[in-house]
Image 1 (tube, one colour):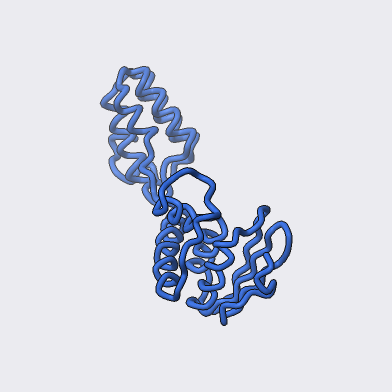
Image 2 (cartoon, helix red, strand yellow):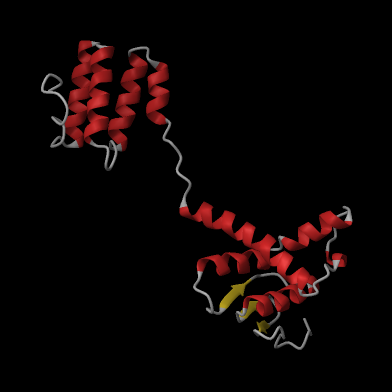
Length: 198
């Protein structure tokens, strides 16, 4: 199989790939095992080598004393998942929204932060409250103009209530926040249905 060269493993099923690797192990040939690995990698580049084959490959490398090769087999290059990218985009959006609502007259009400930290840290803590992160995530994940709905199991704080009114206004989105007491319908005009009775 190895002598036939590149592309010869295209039609091999995972169990046949395992048989090839075991044949290399029986020969106790590290060079043959490495060659088989290269051949399997090049022929399965579109979908990768099956997990059982990779585990066997790592085990055989260890048995032949090639611990570094085993580590490389088991270390998969980490791709940034789409959710992580959206998370980063949401945090960036929170900062952007914070600048926009400050320009529209928002002043952080730091009385709602119970931690004993300075005023700047309190303002940063308010900026990252769960409902603001959820709204930012919704803004980067949905088409413009789509109403956003956020459900949380805690009561919305007074500062977030004021901030979300301005967020609805500057983004032109209707935002509904359901906390543990009531629904808050924030209109595009920056007014809440609760009449500021939160």
